[in-house]
Amino acid sequence: MPLPRQGGNSLFSNSFLILIIRFFPSLANLLVMIWYSRRFNEHFYGLYQNFWIQAYVLAPLICFGLHVVMVTYSKETIVGIARSIQVFRYTRYSIWVLALGVVFAMMQYQFLGNDFVLPFIFLILFSLNFILESFLIVCRNYITLTVINISFSVFWCLIHWYCMQESTDLPDLFRMLFVIIAARFFIYAVIGFIHFRKTTADNNITITELSKIRSLWLHLGLYDVLQVLFSYIDKFIISLLLVAQVSAIYYNASQNIPFLPLLLSAAGSAVLLQLASRKSSDENADTIRLMNQSGKLLSSVVFPVFFYLLFFRYELIVKLFTEKYLPAVPIFLMSILVLPVRAYNFTTVLQRHHKGHIINAGAIADLVLALVLMYPLYRWLGLPGVAFSFVISTYLQAAFYLYHSAKLLHTHPLKMIPLVNWLIKLIVYSCMFIAIHYMASRYFTGWITLILGGVALVMIILASLFIELKKQKQDVGTR
Image (cartoon, rainbow, N blue to C red; front, side):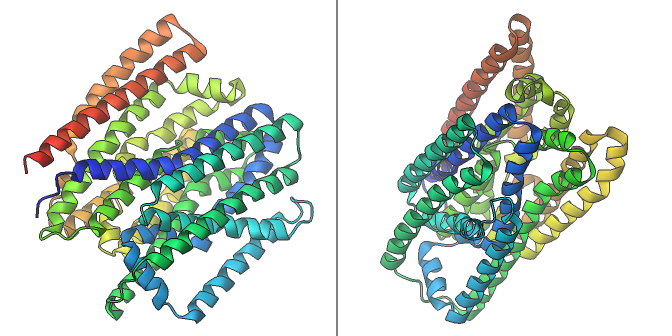
């Protein structure tokens, strides 16, 4: 069955709306990172980030893939599953959540002025927000989620700005943040409960299907934990082996590029939502088509961002974090080499087909390979070599996922990606940004160069998306 005429635009609109929901909290975190890096010394900034590193590591253990697996199914299926789960399983999960809350509270006990209750509740509500948000996304409650997250982000920035201006200590800062974390949880819970009560449950789920769903959930939970570990293991090791100043430089230089993980997640979720809401006589062809559309749209954003960061890396590091972070430039160069592979969600097909064991095999191999390469590349290239080890392992992981996804859909791996489209964009964008950087740096310096490059970046992304969406609309219209 051919795609509906609105298929291309529907994929884009779903991706865009999910991205917008998660964009503003990510923007708020980026602003705080810049403010606190510039204003405070490495010791204070390190203590602040340690709280979040520990929270980000434990939160996936609480969620354990629930927020990821939800977007694989319709809301009727989710409600049906939730109502079929036995009470003792909910009790067992609640004990797990409470135990992790206790662990986090013990880790933060001295840091937050011997306060046990605050970090205990903080982590639980912070984690459950991810699960509730995913359920509301499945319910297509985009406008409400956008309003809530914009409001949350504004208060987040205001609290951090106030505490920075007043030199408030960290325990008081986190007490203020707890208030808006709790408020968002309460709002999510009320709206989610209303949707849950109004949704007609799918009661036709067989025991075999439940077994597959449970297996996928467990695999995705493990994968989510592994991904978090992959993101923080290098920073953790460096913080143990090297001095705080070097650790701070590496931390800022090797951060995930803001918003791109959100973009990738939004695109993958949109494809899964599309597939979950339609029945097709040829699902394989439908999936390949959607994955190619997603890859073309993602590359229209990811590739220009990559070349902008590549050619404007010096101006970006120095102006955002000041010259004390100048040694971060070569580390940053190595870390952004991973960006081109982010123009595609390599686990979407595997998730759709409940191949969680393949996803986890790739994640474990990715982490192990990066750790094996880390020391020899550090001896060869220094700290940039540590970042480069994760780049190499990520490309090999992408090839592994692509091979298995193509095998599931009975096609060649290269047919899974818009290869010609990507090659043309890589050539065109690289030439454009070489010229833009040359002209901007020839006549201007500092912030002006950076801003001119940023303006050009936005214009190129908008033009590229417009051309891609127009072409996809024409392609859908001809079928």
